[in-house]
Amino acid sequence: MTEGGSGPSDTVICVDVGSTFTKALLVDLGSAEVLATAQRPSLATGDVMDAVDGCRADLAEIDARAVDADVLACSSAGGGLRVAVVGHEALVTAEAGRRVALSSGGKVVGVIPTAGESAEGVSRLLAALVAPQPPESPPDLILLAGGTDGGNREAVVAAARAIAASDFTGPVVVAGNVDAHAEIAEILAGQPHVLADNAVPRIGVLAPESARAAVRAQFLQHVIAGKGLSARSEQFARLVQGPTPDIVLAGVELLAHGIDDERPGIGDVVVVDIGGATTDVYSVVTLDAERSDDGLAHEVVAPTSATRTVEADLGMRESAGLPPSYVPSTDAEFAADEEIARAAAASASRRHAGRSRVVLSPDGRVVERTGVDLREVALVVGSGGVLRHGRPGVAQRVLGDLVTTADPEGWQLPERARIVVDQDYLLAAVGLLSGAHPNVAYRLATALATVTT
Image (cartoon, rainbow, N blue to C red; front, side):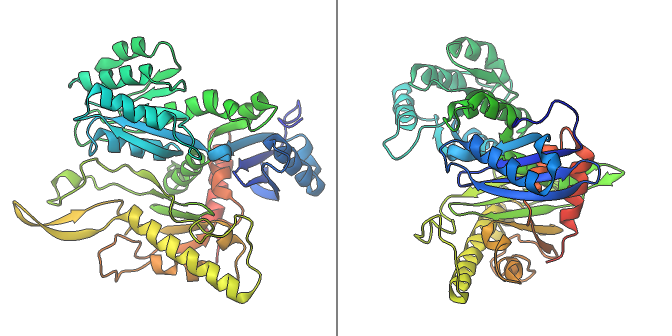
């Protein structure tokens, strides 16, 4: 039984079903220790549940308790969660929607700002987005944003009408002006939708929590079971707690913030996950409470404590024109792999962090900040096969330049952080366990923070 035995178990299996590999950890709920790990190709048989079953069998060969252990899973298989964002102003609500989608674990496949577009123009843009030319795939979900609470309702209502009139039949998460909810609910009555709190309730405020939860719920209810990943799709959907990036970000948040005063977090954290097709960067930082009055020039959309960015042009294999199955075997090949990883990590981290620089404004010279200020980060966590399976010292060679106080271009990189590698995919497990077993999740996170590299 893949979902676990009928009685209580003192172990749990945490599974990350990836597009290429499915990784599993058997965790002792009493000691908060990883008892065993396993890995199988996700779609070797064309059915991801076979990979989950195979991982359970491999774990059971090491510890028989895996046979009856419950399974908690996250998934990025089948392209993960593909999100299209429809907003009003490109610099405000459309950008806010994009950030919400990324922090929810989605891959943003298109952003449509409706400001200045006619109804016919918005419809054309939507038509191209929901029925793209091969080999592109349509979005799994549309995130609709627009307007501040109590403000103009017309733009977000018109966008809802365009979505309803399009060929898109998937779920819609509405995260715009709450005063338009009743009208939008009537417009979207013919397709799955959920009304979340406004992601931009007022100018200068980004409030992603409600929309992020709604995206996760729609992913579980409408997307996972419809991916065609398993003949046992309902069983697979019951195992999956959310998209892998969303679950990992939850793990990073627990690592940074902790649970309570008795179980504190370690402070600001950044995670650099160097994958075959993309490089993802997650950060959880303490926001400046005096930000609005500090005399600096800032981005139009306010930052949030937890942030994720995805760099689709920075992958270990796709960017280098190598097949996903490529594995280095000689010192020269390992060195070349490290150089690719170093470049991907550096570029992705700088795009995520942004920088501080002096610019001229009508008020004179001001310091402009963009991105996420990582300078106070206490821990840099590296992830990805190039770090897990590399030669001794690979973490320092690939990530060492990200910790610096002497960046000449003003990139807001960590100044005094330790570097560790998430060797056993602990962050996904921490995120998966954070709801039902928070103390176990906390102890695993603490173990990761004290790893030596």
